[in-house]
Structure formats: C-alpha cells, structure tokens
Amino acid sequence: MQTHQPTPALSCSSRRGAPYRRSRAWLALAAGTTALVTVAGAAAVGWVPWLSVGAAALLVMWNSSSSRLPPLPVKTLGWTQMLVGAVVVAAFAAGHHFGW
Image (cartoon, rainbow, N blue to C red):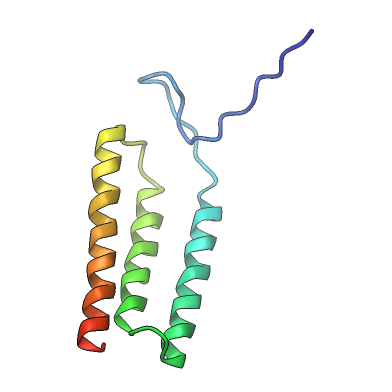
C-alpha cells in the first residue's frame, strides 16, 4: 500500500536550517485587502470609527512586509503577533472612545 506524502502547507521546511520556499502570500494579502475595504465601507456608513481603517491598513502593511521575510522562530512570531494584535485593539478602542 502506497502512502501519500502531503505537500507542507507552511512556507518553511520542518528541518532547522533548511532552505524555505515562498508561501502563497497573495491569498493572505487578498483577504487583508478585502477586510480593509470592508472596514472602510463600514466607516463610510458610520458604523465604525475612521481610526479602525488606519489600524486595518497598518495590519495589511505589516502582513505584506512580513510575508517577504524568512520564517521567524515560533516564540518570536507569537510575541510579535500578540503585540500587533494589542496595537490594533488599542487603536479600535481609542477610535471608539474619542469618536474618531
């Protein structure tokens, strides 16, 4: 019986120090851009503050720049995502509080 070896979904090899291949970052960038357009539409209608559009734009820019870098260690990636998420939440909260 033959076993099927699935193609890894991650952008890096599972072996430390092995060369990595480029991921399909366009899918994540398309999703981020779609979310940005959705938030901008919601801000135009008045459902969310305009600062949330800026926060979403920063998040899309962060993702587009980090998708071009080599993979990070898991601990560094986790702390970075926590920091970026906290900044986005703080921006949304500030926009709501101050009515931006």
